Length: 171
Picture (spheres, helix red, strand yellow):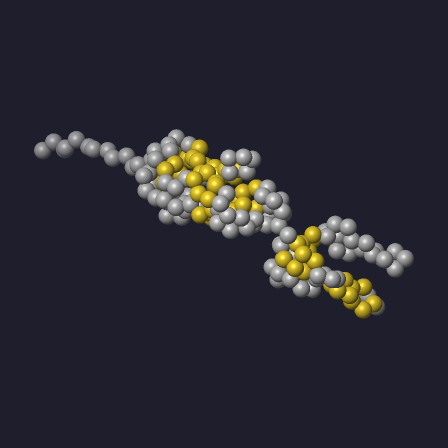
């Protein structure tokens, strides 16, 4: 990549044989949207740079948990780390869209409470006030009500410590 997003990378077959003075590249891809030029070089020949090309983000294809919820939580207490979910295209690029509702649910022995229905802002969904009830292991699922669904890493509410009361010692 000669110009464009410095965090982007070019993939595909970047080395090709020259046949009758031509090198054909059929599977090149850039992983981030934006405007780019590509530099081509061959030993003994001056390098050339392509005309500007535009890479655009595709339609929503998946969800990605970019901030996992707290792994260990207390029943009835808001998570210290609230989840953030991104809407992404098939190439893993964030789809900058707003107003798409993404629902959060818990799979486990209790219920998920808080702001569980949040609309995207610039392709990100920031949850607030989420908490679980009842001890046990959980996975949070996030979905748009259609085909896009993703699961969080496990979340656990440890069992409360057991307290043993011993009878008084005889005097």
